[in-house]
Length: 168
Image (cartoon, rainbow, N blue to C red; front, top):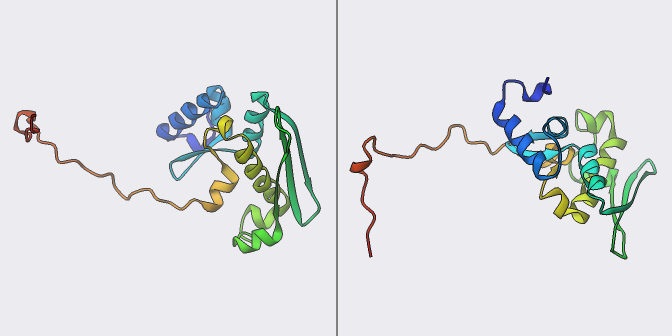
């Protein structure tokens, strides 16, 4: 019943559900909208857009792509200036993404759109997204920092043998 990425991984499942609750997603919606990438939860692009729209704080959202540059324009309620973010193929080349095997090679327009969207959403609605990255961006920028094995604390079996803390 859960997405394949969460099957057999209850820790990531729990993290996704808890993070989803923080941004207003039900547990099942969280499992469908949150990816855990290198131990860090991230919202898929459509999930981030859904969370922002559900907040009621987005007055207007427009996305365009001219074949070279994707643009995402968002106006937040109560603010005069819209938030405009772009991502071009030149940006993708500079970041080493253009032609990268996978979605950047197969769907460059969609990937430009997701990058422009993620920047606009995170810049304009950080309070709503609570620091979450957009998964499409996180997949490109996050490096695996998971330790090969967890650190082990040297704690004696008999707590009475533990060193005493100095008292004042």
